[in-house]
Length: 101
Length: 97
Image (cartoon, rainbow over all chains, first blue to last red; front, side):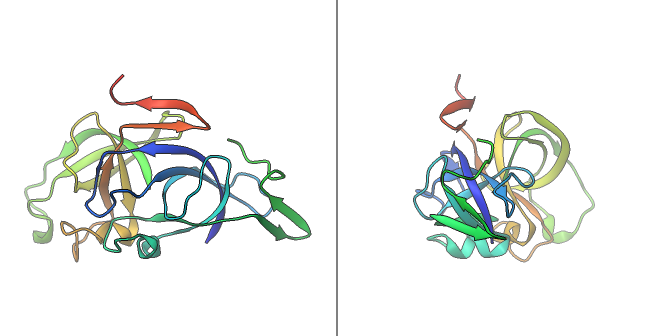
């Protein structure tokens, strides 16, 4: 699992059956300093989150397990809203992280 | 998942029999600013996407999580057709504009 910042929302009406009602959001993965790490991707938001939120997400086959319907082609899912993370003596919080939006 | 644009299709007469009757599309990957990347994937279509459509595709073992690709040699599947997206409240892509 990784930390990420929600940076946007995606609207798709035609989805694989079973994904109806599951929001899709752009997320930017973050490193231990809260800086952007790698490329942004789109993830299913299993919990309610919005742009600017610090979240953690899972990628790979396991992401589908978090969805309401588990037999769906999903390779990234937002699992939780993060109030604050602490790594190497540095807090990565909702306000303090310097991710690009 | 990543977003890409359908730029073509693949015709392959001789292929693994488990991929018979599967629609294969060529997708050019775009970034979050809708800028095309020099990166292409061939993906099985599970939602009826067409040329020029912006689509979402899943990769890896997740791509086998559809009735079309279950237990088949496939590592990329188109699982949604994108209507629009925004970044931080600013609209980036709109299909119907």
